[in-house]
Amino acid sequence: MTYHPKSEFLRVMIERGFLADCTDLQALDDSLNSGTVTAYIGYDATAKSLHVGHLLNIMMLRWLQKTGHRPITLMGGGTTKVGDPSFRSDERPLLDDAQIAENIAAMQQVFARFLDYGDTAPGAMMLDNAEWLDGLRYIEFLRDIGRHFSVNRMLSFESVKSRLDREQSLSFLEFNYMILQAYDFLELNRRYGCTLQMGGSDQWGNIVNGIDLTRRVAGTELFGLTSPLLATADGRKMGKSAGGAVWLNADMLSPYEFWQFWRNTLDADVGRFLKFYTELPVDECDRLGALEGSDINAAKIILANEVTTLLHGAEAAANAEATAREVFEKGGVGDDLPTLELTVGELGEGISIVQLIVRSGLAKSGKDAKRLIAENGARLDDAPLTDAGLMIDAGALRAPIKLSAGKKRHALIKLAD
Image: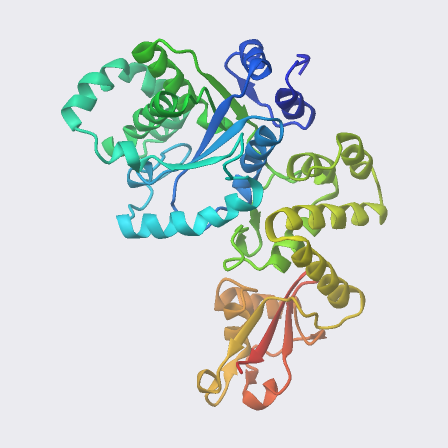
């Protein structure tokens, strides 16, 4: 990127690697430099928690606010009822109003860790697009909004084209999603003066649609800015671990497991992840990312501590690091490990070690747990676990036991008080 921006926000976006594309970089830069810009990112409520894949764009909103502009987190109470088809091979399961409301309530706690929703300018805003989408009258919407969309053009967007090229069904419901997202941008501009939409590069088509619609309906020029779609250095999708999605809510993934995810970052990813997910100066990120050998592990601990502090607080980060040292360096149990508590009633006459491995989250199925044991990847209290038929009863849990899958994943099993 050879452009040298005047505005602090774009300077940060370019220096730290956040910028993939922008509809008009010069005009957006001028706008950012001449006053407060209101920008939004939308989040559909398809789960009870956001995951690490969302964290890049949350950091973009954080930097937007830190550089004097106003972020909007738009909850998709309306669009979740339709489902974004972008780069999916099948239709999303449809959720009812109660599930969507429950998911939104659970997701909101994460945003409060990264953004200031206070009254002082530029205070962040949390909105729900159900506010304007739920009350739409179908015929009026088709006449006033739908007429501005060319089906030929909609079919050319990669998110739609890829589904059709693979001869996978795309429902008329999903096909409407891009119209609704475009309408969101128009409404946010009308109601709150929002002039910038941000998102991952897979949202480029949807963002451009909103810009075109607003220009046609209101004669207003808006902007779009996208971030790169991330993969780890070995090609894996960012945010996936051996145990599944890396959730941001503590009740779905413990702060220790979250910390451990970042501690396990590949050497080649450390520098750019420090730029994306922390607020350390760029020069320091580059210095830490260039370390080699055992020194790079110290950089990974800094990364894990910084990201965990932002999401869960400094105490949670310190506890996670202390537990990791106890577990890995001293062979101990650690106070902060993921814990499965069992009642005497649940144990009955005993529970198989295979079930415990699955229930503690160290394997996805009994078959996976047995394979882990057969391949010498399982340990019980740091000793090799070789008997897949082992039964654990209440007597064996007079003191907590530690189960391990490989060298980096651990869980405690204990009796409930």
